[in-house]
Amino acid sequence: MIAFLLRLLPGRLLRHKVMLAQAPLGAVLALFGVLAVASADIIGRQSREVLDADFRSVLILQRMIEAMERVNAGVLLVLVGETNQGSQTVTEHKGEVALALNDHRREVNDAFESRATEELAAAWARFDADVTELVRQPPGDAATARYLVRLAPQFAELRQKADTLLGTNQDAIVRRNDALTRTAGRTFVLSALAAVLMFAVGSWISYALTGRLMTPLDQLAAVARRIGEGDLDVRAQAPPGDEIGALAAELNLMAKRLRDYRSSSLGELLQAQLALLATIDSLDDPIVVIGIDGAVTTVNRAAERMLGFPADLAGRDPMVGLDGQIRAAIQELTTHVLAGRGAVAPKSFAEAMRVQSGPDTLFLLPRAAPVYEQGSGIVGATIVFQDVTRLRLFDDVKADMMATVAHEFRTPLTSLRMGLHLCIEEVAGPLTEKQADLLHAARGECERLQEMVDDLLDLSRLESGRAPLAVEPIDFAPLVNEAIEAVETLAADADITLESEITPNLLPAMIDRDRMADVLFVLLENAIEHAPANSRVTIAVKADKLGLRCDVVDRGDGIPLHHQTRIFDKFYRTGDRDTKAGLGLSIAREVVTALGGQIGVESTPGHGATFWFTVPVLAAAPELETPAPQA
Figure (tube, rainbow, N blue to C red):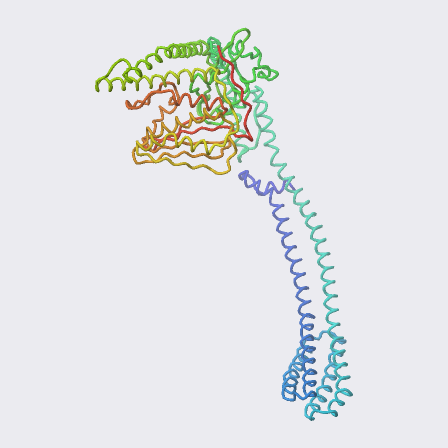
C-alpha cells in the first residue's frame, strides 16, 4: 500500500512526494475535526432541548404564581376597605394568570403534566369565580368570613398545585441536565479514543511514507561521509527525476572533480602549505591561528617558545598549560573576530601584557585579524603577539628620564620663582612700570612651568605605581558641585554656562577624593576651553553597568576621528595651533584606570565632544591593588 501511494506521483518533484507523505496526517486532522463538530452539535441540541422543553415552563409557572399572589393581595385590600385599589389589582393580575395558563398549556410535553395543568386551571376557575363575587360585596364581617371559609383554602390548594407543577418542571430540568452531562462524558471519551486511534494510524502511514522517501537521502549521506573520509571513487545511486536524483548527480560530479584535483594539484598544495608554515615559523613574534570552531589549528615556533604551546597540537587542549592572561586574551580576541566585528589592533603600549618566559620578562602586545576564504566568509582568525619588550624598555627609560629631568628642574625653578618674587616686591630696588610688567609676565611663565613639572612628576608616579590612592566610598554629587564651583570664574570669563544633571540616589563611588577632583577639574577646564561663547557645558552623572558614569559635554567643533585615539597621550596636540599641549588628560586617564574604571571620548566633528569615564561603586567595587613598579 505504501509503495502504491508513492507511485501515485511518478517522476514528480520531491516536494510533492513529501506533501503526499504528510497527507494521512492531514486527513486524520480533518476527520477528527468533523467528529468534534458533530459532538458539539449533539451537545448543543440537547442543551437547547433542556431550555425549550422545561426552562420556559419554569419561568411561566413562576410568573403565574406571582400573579396569583397579587390577586390574593388585591382581595385582602378589598377586605380592609381599599376597594378601588384592591379591585384594580385583582383585575390586572387575573388576566396575567389566565395568559400564563394558556402559555403553559403550549409547553406541556407529557400526560402527567397535562393532567396537573388542567387540575390547576379548574382550581383557578373556582377561585376566580369566588373572588369575583367577593369583590362585589361590600367590605365587612360577612365578606371576611367568606374569604376565610372559602377563598383562603382555595388559594392554598391553588398554590400547592402550582408549586407541584413547578417542582415537576424543575426536576425535569435536573434530569435532562444529568442526561446531558452523561452524554458529554461519553462523547469526550469516544472523541479521545477516536483521536488517539486516528493519530496512531495517520502517524504510522506518514512515518512509513517518509521512511521510504528518506532511504535515498540516507544513501546519499553515507556516500558523502565516505567522500569526506577520502574515498573519492565512491558513487551515489539514486533514481533520476527529482531533487534527490539531481543531488546524487552533483555529488558524483564533485567526487570526480576532487579526485582529478587531488591527482593534479596535491603536490603543489603540499608545497604551498609547507612554504606557508616555514614563513610563519621564521617570524620572531608568536603567531596563533584559530579555526572557525574556535580551536587552535597552527602555531609557530615563537609561540611554542614564548607562550608555552606544545609542539604537537593533536590530542589534548593546547591552551591548558598557558599563562592565564594569555589564554584569556586568545579567547577574547577569538570571540571578537569570529563574531564578525573586524580586526583588533592595540591603541598604545599600555595594553601590552607582562609575561614570564623562563628567566626573561616579556611584554607582548596582542592583535588579531580575521581570515577570509575566497567566495566565503570568515573561516578563522590570526592572533599575533607582538614582542614590544625593547620598545617598552625604551618607553620606561623615556618616562624615567622625563621624571628625572622634571625633578632636577624643581630646585632651579624654585630659586628662579623666588628671585622674581623678590624683584617684583622691589626688595632689590625700585622698578619702572615696564620692568614690573616684564617681571610679572616672567613670573606667570614660571608658574606655568612649575605646573608642568608637577604634572610630569605626578604622571610619572601614577604610571610607575608609586602614587598610592586613598580609595574610599564618596558621594559623587557634592564632588561635582565643588568642581563646578572651582571653574565658575573660568566659565564666566569665556561666557560659558555650566549645568549639571545628576541622577538621585546614586551609590557611593569607590574613589580617591583628591585625585577625582583633579580629573573633574581637567575635564571641565578642557570643555570650557573648546566650547564656543554663549554655549553650555554639561556634566552628567548616572548609574552604569560598570558602576557610575560621568559625562562632560561641550558644544564645540568636536574632535576628528583620527585624533580621538591619541587624545589622552602625553603632550598630544590635535592640530589646532591655539590648543595647549599638556598632561591633564593623560593624568586623568591614569587616575581613572588606577581606580579600576574606563575613560574615553565620543565626538562627531561639528557637534561637540563628550569626555566620559566610569568608576566602580561601593556595591560592586573591585579590590584595588597598587601595581608594583615595572622594569
